[in-house]
Image 1: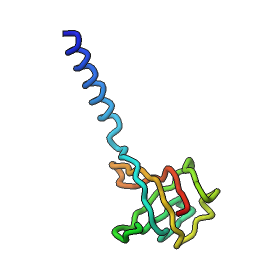
Image 2: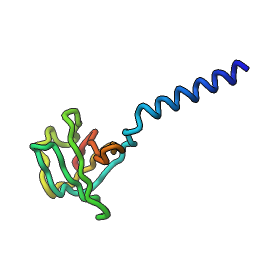
Image 3: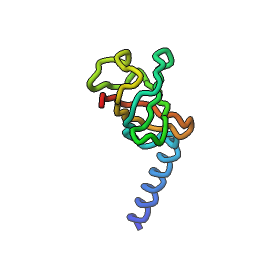
Image 4: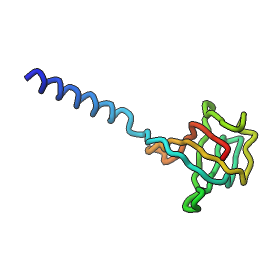
Length: 101
């Protein structure tokens, strides 16, 4: 009986946690070429390496860089790998890390 109670409580806690954070998706590595860059809006668009899509990505202030030291070093046409997470409620990707490819 005690095991059943614990199981029910654990399921309820997991269900509540899932309901509390529905907008966060899983991180994804987006590899491709920078198609556009807007430093003022902290946004970039990447055309995927396979050419299937152009993805708009928000660049928050806490994004980390590898192979470059700042956002200002990025240029249109540059190959990058962006680890980003999609916010399901806005549909927008948000970068966690940007690496020179």
